[in-house]
Length: 255
Length: 308
Image 1 (cartoon, rainbow over the protein chains, first blue to last red):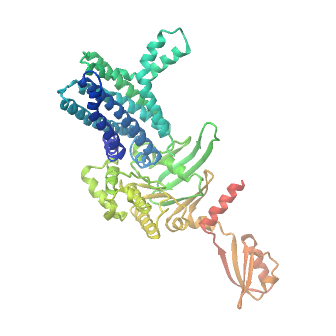
Image 2 (image 1 turned 90 degrees about the vertical axis):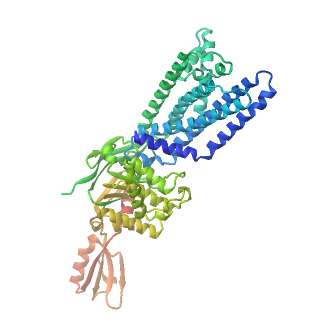
Image 3 (image 1 turned 45 degrees about the horizontal axis):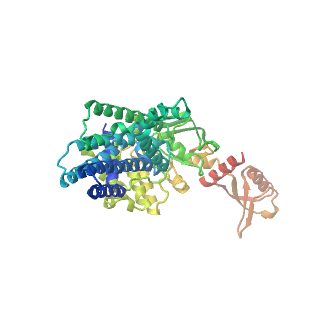
C-alpha cells in the first residue's frame, strides 16, 4: 500500500507542477465566469443556464484534464523510461499502475473540488443561492472521470500517446451516445448495425448513467438507487479496465 | 568456492517489432555466472544484447526462455529486487523533481523508514559529489550530474548487486574517475558490480572478470589477464649475429637496429624462428609476446561472429 501511495503522491506532484493543468483550469474558470453572459443572452431561467453551462463546462474540462494528463503522464513515464528505475526496485508492475491511477484520480478530484467550489460561488453570486445538489452532479462527473482515467491507463500501456488520447476521447463520446444508439437500433430488424450497437453498448461504459445534470438543474427527483447503481457500475467498470491494463502491463517489454 | 550472486542460464529473447516486420532474435541462450564480491564487466558491440540482458535481469524485459537467479532468488521476485541497485544507460529521471526530492522518492520506494531516509540520501549525495547541487531541478542538470543522481539512486538501498549499464558514458575524465572510485569502493564493501561499458580501458582497469557478448551469446569469459593471455597472436624477437633479411621463417615485420635486429613472427612460427636462429649461429636477446588489448579481442570476436 505504501508503494502505491508513494507513486500516487509523485504523480500528483508531477501533475500539479505541469503547466498544462493550469491552462485547462484557467479555461474552465473562464467558462464558469462567462456563464452569466450566456444567461443574459438566453431566454429563460438564468439560474438554470448558469448551472447547466457550469456543469457542462466542468465535465468538458475535467474530461480534457483526465484524458490529457492520464495519457501524458503514463506514456511519458514509459517513453522517457523513468519507469525503469521504479520497476527495478521492489515494486510490482500492478502497484506502479495503481499508484499512477490513484495519483491521476487525486489530480482529477482536486480540480473537481476547485471547479465545484467556483461553480457554487458563481451560482451564489448570481443570486441562485446555495444548491447542494450541484455537488452531487459534479461528484458523479468525478465517478465518470474515474472510469475514463482507467481507460486512459489501459490505452497508455497498449498504444502510443496520441492514439491513447484519441481512443479515450472516443470512449467519452461513444459512452454518452451508446444507450441512445442501442435504443434506436432495437427498433430495427436484425442487422449489422443492431449487432454493432449492442457490442458498443456492452463494451463501452454507458457514461449517461453518471449524468444527473438535468435532474439537478431542473430540480427533478433523483432516486437513491440510481446514484448507488451508478457508483457500483462505475467502480466495476473502472476495476475491470484497470485489471486489463495491469494484465497487459505485466507482460509488456519496456524497451 | 565463492558464491554465485547472479546466475543466468539459457536466456533467450526475440523481439517482434510489428505485424509486418521481421522478428529480431536478440539473446540466443546466454549463460553467465557472476560471483559475489567481484566486478564483472560485460562487453560487446552495439546490438550484441548487453542492454537486453541487463533489462531481463532487472525485470524490464520478459525473457522468452531461461532462468535468472539473483542471490538464489528468481529475478522477478521482490527478494531479488531488494538485492539490486540499477542504473540505466542514459539517466532517465523526473524533470519535475530536484535531485534531493528524487532520491527521497527512490528511498521511499525501497521501503526505507522515514527517519532513515534523510541520512541515507545525504550520505549518497556525498558519495556521488552532489551535495551542493541536489536542490536544483533535474531539468537543469548536465548529463554528468544526472548520471551521478542515477548512480545515487542505485546505491541508496545498499545493494548486494550493483547493475550499471554504461555508467561512464557521457562523463568527463573527472566524472569517470569518480565513478571508477565508487565502483572500487563498492567492491571493498563487498558489493558485486555487474556493468557494461564501451570504454574498454575502464573495464580493463576495474574488472576482475569480463564476458564478451556477440550476437546474443557469450563468446569469451574469464579474468581480463587470462582472456588476453589466450590472445597472444605474435611475438617480438630480438637477436644479433644475423641480418633479418636472411631469415627464412616468415616474418610479420623486421627492423635492423645499430645493436640488434628486431622481428615479429606469428605465434605458431615462433619455435621455427628460434630453431633457425640457433642453427645459424645468431644470439637470441629477447622474446616478448605481443599482448592484444581487450579491444582487439572484442574486434576479432565480432569479425568472427560476422563472418560466421
